[in-house]
Amino acid sequence: MKKNRKHSVEFKLEAVNKKAQGESVSSLSKSLGISPSLVWKWVDEYTTFGKSGFLTKQQERYTVQFRMDVVSYHKQKGISLRESCMRFGIRSQSTLYCWLTTFDQYGCEGLKVRYESIPNMERRKTERKIIEDLSRLEELEKENLYLRAENDFLKKLDALTQKRQTPPRKKR
Image 1 (cartoon, rainbow, N blue to C red):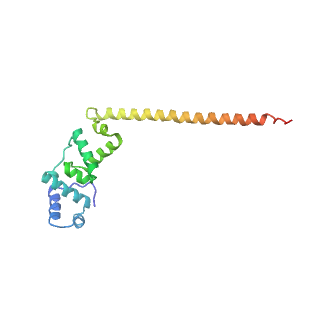
Image 2 (image 1 turned 60 degrees about the vertical axis):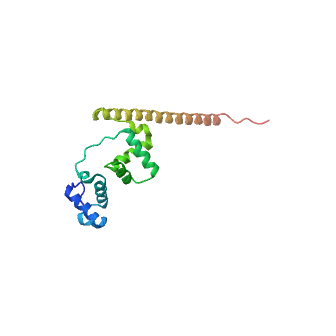
Image 3 (image 1 turned 30 degrees about the vertical axis):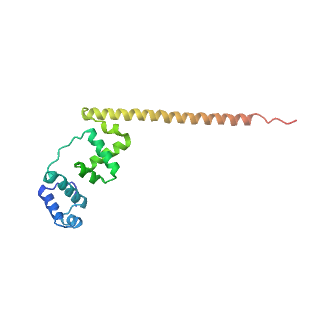
């Protein structure tokens, strides 16, 4: 199976029609030389969007409320990513997966963050600056920890040398 191969609309429709006629996904994938997951994806796109699901896709923009609705529905029902995408008409499962991981990390506020107004280069500079600031803070924390350990070591060493230098007192 070749990767990153583009398939025509007719090819996709042929696969979907064969599946609708009762051919199994595994035999379809072997005969067409594609993965079974790709066949399932095409079947889902066709059932959800019709033939227009196979046309070139433009980047869709979803509202924050829509994202929250999808994430909460997915979590409440406990259904698969594929089923959630079909239910809400989301073309890519990776989009929903990104929303779920963002929600798990940052909550509802994470779904609100948008970078549309920031050009890519500026965004990279701010991200790099944040990472540099964090790494500088981490360096200082490591140095602080090292100095504390060194200080404790020197205190114990000093205490041991003083103990050896003072002769033990004789008991009367």
